[in-house]
Each structure stands twice: as C-alpha cells, then as structure tokens.
Length: 362
Length: 111
Image (cartoon, rainbow over all chains, first blue to last red; front, side):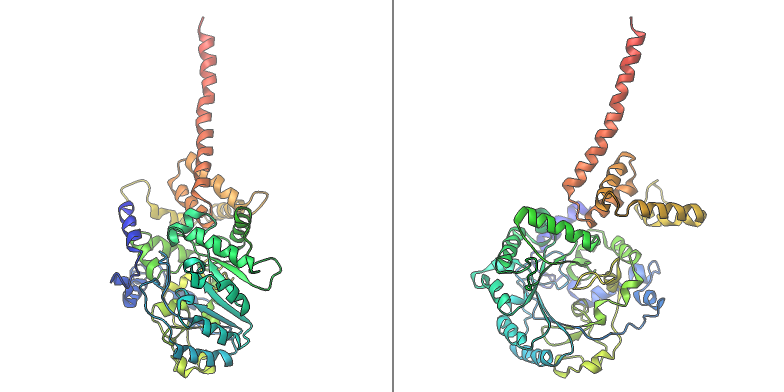
C-alpha cells in the first residue's frame, strides 16, 4: 500500500498543501487529528496530563531569551517535511511596516537572541534592509536561518555570505544528511550539490572555520518517520564526512525532531506512519526536557505581526494566551505572564534529549 | 486475539514482559540497555551488529527496531545492506562448512 501512495505524495509535494487545497492546510483539521484518535481513545496520554505529572501544567515561560521572527512563508524549496508548508507559491510576506514594528521591539527587548526564519527569509524583498537595521540594535546573537540553496538559487543571492559577514550574522542552515541521496529525497533533486557549494562559499569568507567568530551551525532533521539520534554522535559523523568528502567546516549540529504538523503530518498519515510516530514521541517523552522547551524562552512573530509561543504554534495558528497578541501592542512583561498554549505536537519537543530551534535541551 | 503470530504493534509492548516476572524482566532490560551503550565499540557499530543478527535469527521485531535505530543514527542503507550480507555470509558459511562433515562421512563410508 505504502509503495503505491508514496510516489503520489512526492509528485504532489512540489506544491504547498495550501496550493493543493489539501485538507491539512486547515489548522483546525490538523488540531482535530492531534487532539483526537489515539489521544481521545485514551491509548496515549494528552500532553497536558503528562506535564501535569511533574507539576508543569500550565506551562509557564521563564525569562525571554529569543525573539524569533518569521518574515514570510515563501521559499525556493518545497521540502517534504516542512512544518511551515513553505514554497514558491506562498505569498505571505512580512511588510516593511510590520518590520518597523519589529525593529522597535528589537531595540528594546531583553532577549539576547534575534532569530530570523521563514520560508527562505532572504526572499523577502525587504530582508537586507531589515537585517541592516536590526544589526544596529547590537543584539548579542543575530541568527538567520538559511536553507543554503538560496545562496545558489539566483545571482542576486550570490553575495549573501559576504552580506551575512558584514552584519556579523550567525548562520544556521539546514542539512539533512551528509550523503546526496538522503538530502535530495527530503528536500528535492539537486539540493545536496547546491548546499555543498553554498557551505564551501560560507567557509571561504570565514564562516564555520575553527576558532572563527563567524558562526555557522547546521540543522539536522530526520528524513522520514523516525526521531533524531544522539546530537553529539551525529555532529561527529557530519563533521568527519563533510570534511573528508568536501573540505567543509562548521561549528555545531542541531538535531531537531520533526513535529507532526503540516506537511510532515501529511507525510505521516499518507505513509501509514502516524500512529507509530506518535507512539515513538510519547515513549521517548523525557520529563527533564520540559523545563527547557523553547516556548519557555521564546516569542515567535508571524509575517503579519501576530505573536505565538513558538514557530510550530504559529503554523497551527495557536496565538499566545495573553492580552498582548500582536507586535503593535508588544509588552514583554505582560507577555511573560501567560500560560503557554499546548497540544499533542508538543511531544516533539520533549522526546529524548528534547528538541528546539537551538537543538537538544536536556 | 490477533490471527497471525507476528503483530507489529506487539513490538512496543515488549516492555510488558516485565509485568509477569519483574526481577528477570528488569535485569534483562538493564543488561540490554547497557550492552548498547557507547563502549569499546560505538553504539553505531553495535546497531549494525544488531541489525545483522536480527536477520540471522529472523526476528521481524528486531529488523523493524534496528532499521529504525539505524536511520536515527544516520546509518545509510548501503551500510545496513552490507551488515545484512555479513550476517547472511556467516549463516550460509555455517551451512556450507557442514559440507566438510558430509564429505568426511561420504569418504568414510565409501570404498
């Protein structure tokens, strides 16, 4: 059965769920699945009950450390596992006006890290202006999540490594595997070769080199219905293979668990892996990861200025449970006094050594 | 009751064997966990050994478990298949080496 369905998913995956009018483009449909089935039947415990066992329900934020801004869902790639449902057909892009509101917050925030994500953030027409302005705020760690292939996608992006360097941007890039086959299977044909070239160009300007202040970290997402292995062991394997085969250097590898939402949820259901995957997440639940899940130190801002506990909640349209819900009304003290919105996808962040946009947490 | 001897869903119930013999079950899982820790051999190498043995003992649960374990560790399909061949070669070698016994017996019985 799986054999006959999977090629169809792969063919369809060249467009976003939204462009395909797939029912999973609806966040209500996704939440219905996450709250129903195995959990409603009592086969698996609800996340809220699991964290209540260790006194963490309701889940509350700690000090705000990371301001994560999603500048738009447009992307040059259509990765099968993408929780954003990003792609070239997505038109949701942050406007300059919303960026102005974000800059005001960046200048005054207590957060030490600014994290720009997308889509491919570089495709936002105001991206460079925004980076230049944000860099002036002197925030300690300024991250741009770059998918690497964007650097090779068009001549106008070829100078991105130099641009990042000029503004001392910390580059965090996706790299699903150090072999061509696994990378292209998840992210599309040709992605591996372009990513290798982009990494070499980042290295050439000093990114990722031993002792360099120009930080280059890689993100590893499993290319299928399984959880990431030990982050340190994976980092060791990636470093060895990328250095030996391509002379590539990088600093750290973040192993990130795929959460069962959006296109990854679609893949899990279509490949008949959903139940096993949810069992695997719940079985791997690690209470020690709960205190440090990223929603406890992060605020996520969407392209249209709404505020969320994390990028995953943003994609499920679960806005913060606070009087302040939009960047125009931003108030850090009010926001920090809130209960974090949770559902069963949250098991993805507490599995094993935990998972966040900064890698493991436990 | 399932109408086949093997049900994939039984794999995740493996831990339940402890319910009917807590001491032995616990000792087994402690031992099992310890065996697969990083040691003189890496956990990655042990995962490949486990995959090869899973095929030799023809345990469908173990094949599912260690294929998934290998994927989680970033082990490639080429490495996995080589491990399976290593197991298969030993298994077929174990059969074929008995051919010497057959030859011995043949020679002893023949004039």
